[in-house]
Length: 252
Ligand code: NDP
Ligand code: 8X3
Image (cartoon, rainbow, N blue to C red; front, side, top):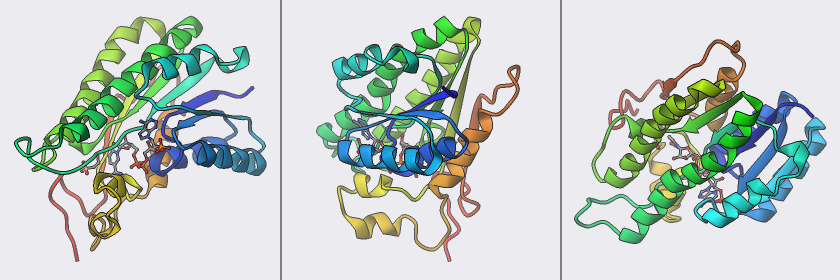
């Protein structure tokens, strides 16, 4: 079996583009997400197109027992995970803290922080056994800056920033690389989810300039995995050319 890459949130956007990029380059893939049918269709398509092996695992990353069950029950030949891409994540709602919806906060905290921690806790011991591995956390410009009405999402991505540094410290003795990729605006299902299905509102986020495309992020994620054993990229912020900070855009 070729290098094994586990990608969380592979049913759309950045995770799906990463799956396509690593499939194209001949890797074996473990793909996860909640939408089982979509996950199976994507897996079959990638196997057919690139002749690679794909193991789809449908579970909700917020449910601790399902995460551990999925990883602990991996067939033996799938346990030597080389690359873990912690991508599953979301923003829900935009509001001040004083007016915020607590259910929205819990979805973001449970997915972006606790979900990332569960899967990392399950996979890191497997990497430690192999004395190698590469964890790639998809952070955000929201993990570097805070913007109006985004306090809780930004807090979860600041947590990803901190966890990337912390996991790097914790695993440095085990030959494990940890990279954070922190994108600006990428056109995916992200804003549709954030605005709870309001497509007009979601589309307006990407109007008047060319946002990043999920393939742009996948190319960079792939690139960081191709460097020599002694080289690790710790942290990369990637923005559309027309975006200067979390809130400053040049829109035509
Ligand atoms: P998408 O909404 O297109 O993709 C999100 C993915 O996460 C889906 O595959 C979804 O799968 C999965 N996911 C969400 N919740 C769960 C859950 N509870 N359990 C398992 N899987 C889950 O958005 P993006 O591709 O844009 O987002 C990917 C990552 O990139 C996120 O962490 C996001 O915060 C980050 N990011 C996005 C930016 C952007 O502008 N788009 C910029 C910076 C960072 P399913 O619904 O099938 O469960
Ligand atoms: C997604 C990008 O700027 O909407 O993380 O927070 S932003």
